[in-house]
Picture 1: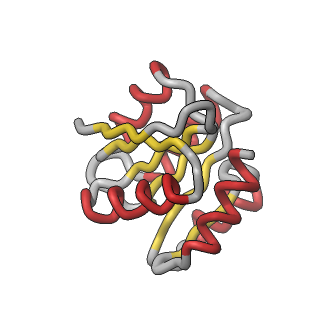
Picture 2: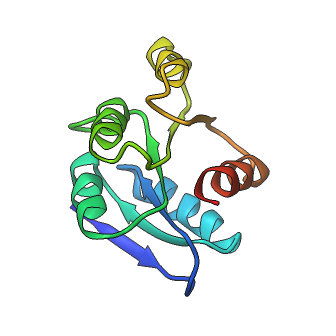
Length: 128
């Protein structure tokens, strides 16, 4: 399990979860560039552990990952931390994700590839 942290003093923290290092690193850099602190996890299990030990204001997770996927992560986070905003990133259309959005199990869907403006809107509106 790997986690990375990039700090902006006194800013909100966004957790980026993706099992692909390159994607996770790029998204973390994009979020950091718009003024938020970031932390990263390479699996849903690592993300759950991180959220238990580190205050975060928003979780953005990939949908498809080895082991526990983003859907299961979002459901566990919603159960344990009902007020923690969660967004899922995906390159695929998925009825389950749209249903989760309708059921308010997640707060947003971010379709890959996405532009920094989309990411910025989601971060600013969900993390504050």
